[in-house]
Amino acid sequence: MAKQAQVMVVTPHPDDAEYGVAGTVARWVGDGKDVIYVVCTNGDKGTNDANMKPEELVRIREQEQLAAAKLLGVREVIFLRYPDQALEDTPEFRKEIVRLIRMYQPETVVTADPYRRYIWHRDHRITGQVTLDAVFPYARDLLAYPDLLKEGLNPHKVREILLWGSEEPNYRSDITDTFDIKVAALRCHKSQVGDNPSSNLEQWLRQRHEKMAEGEDFELAEAFHRVEIWW
Ligand SMILES: [Zn+2]
Image 1 (cartoon, rainbow, N blue to C red):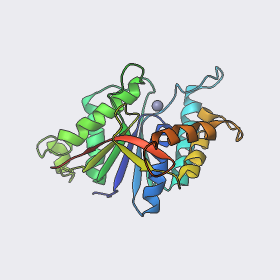
Image 2 (image 1 turned 90 degrees about the vertical axis):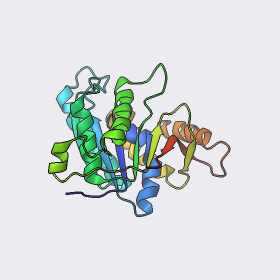
Image 3 (image 1 turned 135 degrees about the vertical axis):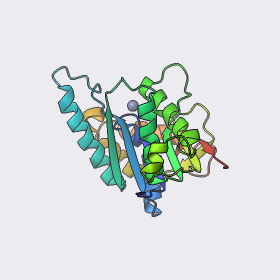
Image 4 (image 1 turned 60 degrees about the horizontal axis):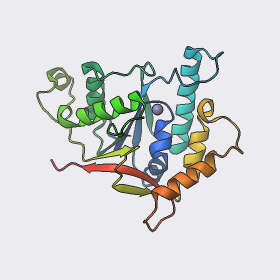
C-alpha cells in the first residue's frame, strides 16, 4: 500500500514550491532522496489576462508544474485540484493530507508557514495549518481514522517539518549549487513569471537567497522555520 518517499512537499498553488523549496529539493534529489509534491489548489485565479479561461489556466498550470517537477527530479506530483482562493480547513481536506502522509510515510514534510502575519495568501495559511494538523495528531494516531486503517494506511510519525515563508526562520538550507536549477524550474511556470529569459527574475531571486544566507558560510540559502519532532 505504501509507496515510501522521504520528502513530501505540500504546496498551495502550482509554483509556490518552486519559490519556497526548489533549490533544496534539487539537492535532496541529488542526494538520492525521493521527493513528491502535493498541489492543493488548481491555481485557476492566477492570471491578469482577461481573455484566459479558468479551465484553460488549470490545464496550463498543471503542465507547468509537471515540467518544473521533472526538471527538479521530483518523483510524483499529486494534484488535489481544490479551487484557487477557496481552500478551507475542512475534515475532507485534512483527511486527504493524512491519507497521503500515511501512504508515502515521509520523514520530512515541507509546506507554507501558516503563521506569517497580516498579508499572506489565505490558501497558504490554510495549506500550512491543515498540513501541520495532519502531521500531528491525525497521521500519528491509531484511532483517528478507522477507515484508513482498514485500507492498510497505518499511523505514521513524520520526523521534521520545514515551513517556507516564515517570519521566524531557524534553518537555512544551502542552495548555492542548485540555484540555477531552481531558476530554471521557476521559469517553467511561464503563465506566472512570463517567458522572457532576460527578465530580472534571476537577479531578484539571487538577492533574495543571498539575504537568506546572511551569517552562513555559503552564498545562497532557502530559509525555513524547522520543527523537529521527537516522538
Ligand atoms: Zn501561492
